[in-house]
Image (tube, rainbow, N blue to C red):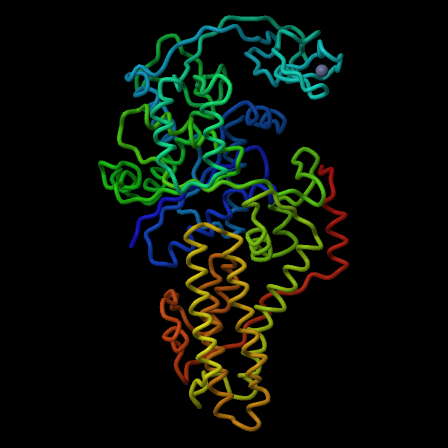
Length: 572
Ligand SMILES: [Zn+2]
C-alpha cells in the first residue's frame, strides 16, 4: 500500500467556476484520488477555496456584505457544488483558516531567519477617498500611447502597451471612480527568489519524469530575460493574513497582509491540518503527510492544475518550502492542463459564456459531465466543448454502450432465467477469449490511470465497455436459450459478473452510475479485478441481483439546440 498525497489547485472564492476550471484541476485530481483509493492505497486528497486578495474584497462590496461573511457563504456554495460533482476531497478547506494564518506566518518567519526576506520601500498610488492603496489593475485612465480612455494601471487593453499607473492621463480609482489619488511611500517584504535560483533549478532538473509542458514553463521563468525575480509577498490590504514573523510582530509591517499568492499554496498544508482538526486528530495525523521527518518520507505527492498555475507551483511555492530550511514535502509529480474552450471561443465568467458548474448540474447529473470532460481533457493541447460533441459522446458511450449493456443483460436475465445468477453451463472458447482480452485491457487501463493519462484511460475504459457489448451481440443469449439453455446461462452469468467489474473500473469516472450497477448486482465488494478470471466468477450461481433504473438517458436534438442558445453568453 502506497501513501498518496493529492492536491488540486484551489479555486478563487469570488463566484461559481465554469467547466473549463473544473476539468483543469479538481476533476482529474478526483479521478486520480478515486483510482488510487480503489487500488487500496492510503490517499489524502485536499482542496480549498482561495479567499484573500482584492477581488474578494470587491466582490463582497458589490454584494453589500462584510468580506468574511461573503467568503463564508461562497465557500459553502462551492463546497455544495463540489459535492454535486462527487469530488471526493478528504477535506475542502479555506485559505482564511486559522491554520493557514499560523503556517503562513511561520513560513515567513523562517524565511526571514534564513536571510531570504528583504524590505523594499516603494511608491504606490493611494486613493484618499477609498482610504487605501490601489493595486495597478484598480487604477484606470487614458492611455498615453493610443488615447484609449479605459487603460488599466498595468496595461492598455487597446494597444497592449505595458504601463505604470503614473503613465496614465487622468487616472482614477475603479473602486470609487475618485480621481483624488496621490503617490505614497510604502514598505513591502520581498522573498529573495534569486538567491534560491540554483536550488530550484537543481530540483527541477532532478524531475526527469515531469511532462514537457510543466518543465518548459518552469525553465522559461527561471531563465528567460532577467531570470527569476524576487517577489513581493505583502500588500497594503485589510483582508488577508496579517504580516507576522512566526507568532511575533513584524516591526514596520503593521496593518499589512501577506500577498494572496504567498498564502494560497500554503493552504495545501493548512487544509490537511484543518482535516485533522475536523476529525478530532492531533498534529501528528497531518504532519505525517507533510513533514519528511515526521512520517512523510514514504509519501508521493501529486499536484493538479491549469498551465497558468505552473510557475507558482514549480517556483514560488517550492521557494517558500526550500527557503524555510525545514523538511517539508515537495511535490513529486505535477500534472498540468491546457485550456478547455467553449463552442468556438472561450469560456467567459464576466460575459457568462459557457456552462458554469451549478448550471451543468441543473440540467444533467454529474456523471454525464464527468465522462465528457475527462474523456476530452485538455492534456496535450487545448480542447473544445461543443454541444454536438457532448450529445454524441453521452448518447453513444454512456447510453448506447454501457447503459445498453447493463439494461439488456439484466432485463433478459430476469425475464428468462429469474432474479439470481444462473448456474448452468461452463465458459467456452468465446468466454475465455473475452476474459483474456479484458485482462490485457485492464492492465492498459491501470497503466494510463497511474500515469494520469486521462484521455487514454477514458479511451481504454470505453474499449472495455465495447468489448462486453460485442461479446453479448456475438454470444446472443436470446438465441442460444432456445437451443442450448445451459450455454445461455453461462453467458448471462459472465455478463452479470461483468456488470460488477464495470462498476469497479468505471467508478473513478462515473461514481453514481457505478454505485447503481454495484447495488443492482446485490454486492458491495469493490475489490479491484487483479485477476480477471477470478473477478468474472465473483458473483456465484444463485446470487440475487436486480434490474437497475435506466443508467443514462439520451440527449435529444431539441435539448442540444436549447442549451446551445441558453449558454451562449451574457449571464445576469
Ligand atoms: Zn493604448
